[in-house]
Length: 552
Figure 1 (cartoon, rainbow, N blue to C red):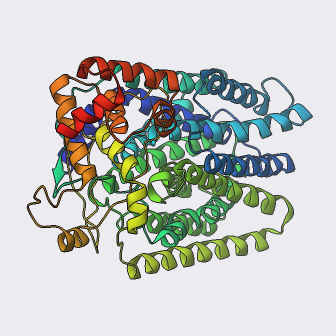
Figure 2 (figure 1 turned 60 degrees about the vertical axis):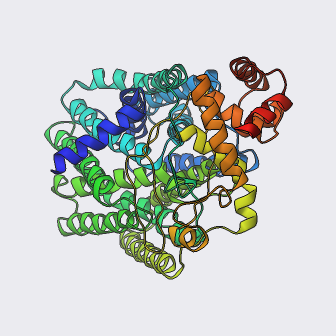
Figure 3 (figure 1 turned 180 degrees about the vertical axis):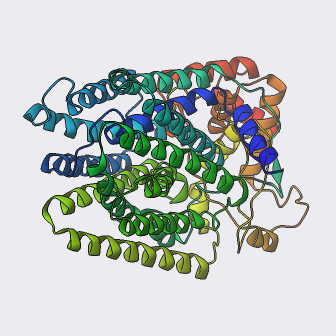
């Protein structure tokens, strides 16, 4: 039964997202490159150093600046121009070669600069993928990430069995291959168009994404999913440095590498089980609790064996690491944002890197006993944050947003509903205090791969109190009448998904410039779609279109 359930989740995601295998491959290659400097089977992994510490803190500053840029300009996408995407990948490839000593001596200044460039570009490559994937629903994105982590585990195991020189060349190519998959996947989305289907409404309202919708308990979610990240990675560093002295370039290094691969594959299996059976606004809190449990096990085993027998603790360490990386890439869905969900992703990546930098600094300058006490303190602080966040989430009912916020987001919510109506809902998920459901949907073709607009959800308890079971024309809002009229026109005149969005926004009175800003595309692209909409509906002006929509 479990196997059938997992197969069904993967099949539904594959059906909803064309080219899912391309995305899985590209994300797995990005994660592989992200951890390339920790592969003991072909590279002598260095211990803590001032150069590594400095590079990580520089990456933290850049990621924090990127978060501010996302907040100031929500339409920003660093991958939008392929030149920048391949530039990031190319710099990462060269820096990985330099950092491994293939091009320069490990102690040279160029090698230190390569470490800095590598730390920055690794995070940027992952964020490029987050920019693309966050346009889908939370569960679809989670499924892709889980499969990608499993694929990364297979690649890690393969690397342990190949000659070091061959793996070095492979690692240098991986970032470029990941960037190629990124733009191939985008092209696949843009060329794929779903035939229009009727909107699925319940009680006169469309369903919304379970994890993207901002909730009143924002502080609790921040404490559960973001605040513990630097403390996790601080502890990871302590356990990571425990096995470095046991590298021998032979059997021990291969054992470490294979243990890391096994832990990565197990992490993917755990994530798929969590997605299948523990998916929901409240149940996702189990992720952080499980990570904390794994960190404790890995720390206890590594301390008990005094760093020896690394295979015993590298497995739980890698499970915890990959699940933490999963939380970082899922941050736009797990923690709500009022301006840009991508700013949350940049903040999560900055916190993840901050813990790594702090751990490297502590290992380089502090006494081992003080370092170990600091790790125990970090785990306790992370536990306090998680428990406090869970308590806040449990004490605050997830009530709906204020009427003013709901009214301000009505137009954007309608556009998202039009885009997500192409595939009928596949499942519903319920959380305490209100029902927040997520639909298995496919994204319409988006020329720029920009993120979909965030919507706010209203609990069913509030709906039941304010709306009858069978809404009548008098109880349906003007927004819903317009939405239904646009859907009927789109189905009867064969409009594409993008044209359905344009139609709805035109029906709201927006002009081409405002629509371009709303959808984060160029004005010329909007005008092209507008001409197609006018031609299919046989109208010539926006006023004629408004009259047509008003007549239904």
